[in-house]
Each structure stands twice: as C-alpha cells, then as structure tokens.
Image 1 (tube, rainbow, N blue to C red):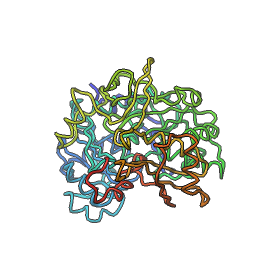
Image 2: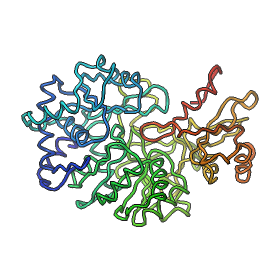
Image 3: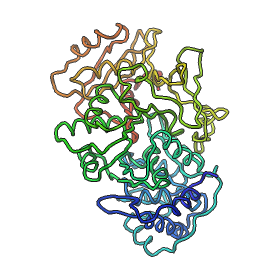
Image 4: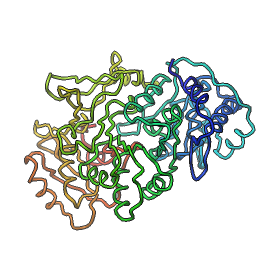
Length: 493
C-alpha cells in the first residue's frame, strides 16, 4: 500500500525530537508536527468535512500549509491547493469545479465566502488545532484521491488534476531517486506549495527525517539570506528563480556554500543562467527535472553542471524509477512525449473528454515534442502548441529563444507565432531588456548571425515588466499571444 497515512505512521515512529520544520524563525519538532497532524482529524470532523471531500487552501508557504498537506489526506479527505496569483474569478471557478466546501486561507477571502460553506482563517485554525483532540490516521485505498491540483492556466480554463495516494507517494519515491536526501540535510522549500512541484519535498523529507526550511514568499534576497542563515543543503527552484538569485548574489554576495544539490524544473534554463549559478554554488550538484502536474517527476539529468558543454547537457535526462517514456512518432524523429507509471494521474476532474484526449491506456500525452537517444536520454524540442508553422515550415520557439538569450542585453524573452496574411504565422518575440540600448533591428541582426532567415523574428515587442508567469514559473504565452489573435479566425494554442 502507498498511502499518506501509512507513510506518516512509519515516519512518526522513526523521527521525534529533531526539527521537522523551520518557518519565520519558528522551529517545530517531528513530535510536535505529528501531534498537530493527528488533531487535524478532529477539526475536519467539527467542520463537517466528510470522508473523500476536498478542502481548499489559499495561502503562502508555511508550516501550517505543510501540516495540512500531510494531514488532510491522512484523515481520508483530499487537498485542493489554490494558486495565490489567480484572480477571484479563477479561484471561485476552481473551488466550485472541485466541489470544496471548506476554504482555509491566510488572507481576506473577499467574495470567495460565497463559494464555500465555511471559511477558516489560518489564525482561527491555529486556535482550533490547539484545542482539538488527536485522532488516529485512517486507512484509505491507495487509489483514493489525495489532492486535486489545478493546472497553472497555460492552456485555457484550468483543469483539476486528480492525484491519488499512490501518485503522490510514488512521486516522493521518485524525488528521492532524483534528489537523494539524507537525514542531516536541510531542505529549502521555496517553490510555491500550491503547485504539485512545490510540495514534492514534504512527504520525502518527512519519511527521511529531513528538516524543511520554509520560505513563505519568494524573493531572491530572502532566499539567499535563508540559505546562508539556515545552512540549507538542497532545494528545487524554477529557472526564473535561479536567474533572479544569480543577479541578487552578484550584487550582494552571501555564504551559500552549504548547498550540495540544486534542482530546477517547470521550464528550460538558459546556458548563461546555468553557468552563472554553477559559479555561485560551487559545491552544488545541479539536477534538471522534467515533469508536469499530471506526472510530477518524469526524467532527471543528474550532475548537469558537469554536462553543460556536452550533447547530454541539452537533454532532460533519463526516466525516473518506475516511469516509462515513449515517443509517439516515426522512429528516429521527434514526436510527442508519452509517459506512463504509478506517478501519472488517471484523469482530470469532471472532464472526461479532455481525459480521453490526454490519457490513453495509461499513457499521458504531454504535448511536448522530443526524442530519445540510444541511451534513453530524453531531448525536448518544444511544446507542440509553441511550434510556429510559417509558410509550411516548422519553427521551434525554443530554438529562437535560446539564440535571443545569448544576447547579453536580454533579461527575459519569449517567442510565439502571430498572424501573417501570407505565411499564416510569423515569428514574434516579446522581450524584457536589461536597459534601453537594445533595439528591434539590433536584436534581429544578432539573431541573423545564428538563425536561418525564415526563423528570424519579424516583430519584437519590448516591455519593462517581467513576463507573465503561471504558479510553476512557466511563461503565460497565451496571455501575450491573445491580443494578436483577437478577431482572427483561429489561433495556435
């Protein structure tokens, strides 16, 4: 059996007085953590949350979030984490679609009070948990729903990804295979916990007796300060976080030699950012993790820092333990990446048509285009939806973006297709420059040195603000693309 309750019961018998969580200077032992987790059962009963029902959480990272994540499924209910960056309308949709009756939040819920039966502030929750009776964890089936994670909104209306106990416990095992932690590690939990990747560490660390250092809200300086003061040894971040950290560290160096493992996921990392990070974290093994909310860990490239200048450095590694990867396409040519394993979701919540489109015979269709080499290393070419077709020629956005990022005047960049009256689509780039010296013609001339003529950006938009991103840190190309396609017959998704 692979369930939350079984995993926590085993961990409770092994780890007692050492620190389990550190958040905002407050340290909590494993004994205290598990005692509070047992009390959560009484709170759920008092609030009338029946077995199998969802509890929505809208909050920043915290020790309370970690205990809710661990305890709610262990008492036979499931969690519904909400993206703190969403609008009230998006939040209300997820709550209604997911059928959550209870919302636990650390902020003013506003109109969300009309979306649930009860709103419980984290302050009131703290009062309740102190008075609650501890209850034993309950036995559940490993295929029961443990968490309902709504996708970050990169494609249309959010979908609820159903992750079972088996899925999430398997993910914890895969995380250990990918990033092997030991008992004396101090893990920095900095990625947002409303995203599946942000909570990967929770069960893994609890199982191993690893102390988790929780960063409530990410900022590069706060992250670096916490690494220095708490002597953090491992973490997983998204590339945009790493880029921001390298900029902040260059301006105000901290002592960050304690980090021995630094994984990144959710989107590609540029070679320049990776090289900067490797210099600033001299003792760290860099690990490139590839996955999705529907799968979490799929592949990993270990020791990426040693492979930057090699062909393998362009891959996302090999399949994790128990995970199968297949390419749907002609042998030897790029095709859609398919994934199968105990970590893969069985369906989307209340969306049978989208489930049948994305999951067939247990294989999840990622929508990513890639290929496997003879040694099983997966190389990603692009997202299928991000492929531009101009005059019948396929143009992969990532190739153009990689060249643009080689220009030292570019801070952020994204490439997508916009309508063209003759060619169907043309290559367009949206750029956040480092300063005002970068011009459209200058950047196109730069790209011309490396790219074929048909791959060159035909238009460039400059903006001062950072590119819009989803919770996991992926650029929301849909938002940037939409104005260009308004009024046209069709758009590339």
